[in-house]
Length: 238
Image (cartoon, rainbow, N blue to C red):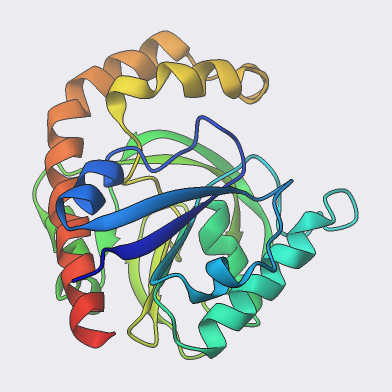
């Protein structure tokens, strides 16, 4: 049987597939990165990939005048979703999916950076995110933008700051505002890459590093459980 193809749309080098890499490889997926700002997003290989994963980045969906490639990225996602092709959006990726589905994307009231819980809806508890309902479960938040829930989407998770932390759409699309994929062992690159943002928000890197160390083992386990479950779901549905 040929290996299934996954294309990861990346905005900055250090925000990559992280913990999802091993899960994909173990399940027989062939991984290719596409650099969103510079690569040709109209290539047929992207449209036809078995799975598209749109990763995070430090820009906003509404900044198309400053970053024109976002228009091409939105067009790509519109094509994928219209064809019901499996698609996962993480952070910026989730905001792009929400925008394509007609929802408003905007700057939130609170900049969320650090490890914290989310609360699952009833639908979320029955979804691939079920592992996040366990006591003391935490995910990595790193965003300032948010979105309204798209029409036809199912809310899966919320927290005290943002009502829409995760949603599913049409059985083949998953959008996560938070970073389940982030590899705790590689977050030092995030601290450097987002140094200006961390300084502007007066986020203590020492405290963030300590929280990462406390959460690392749990983060790896829950990422594996979540992505194994989701990959199984889309393979059945595809």
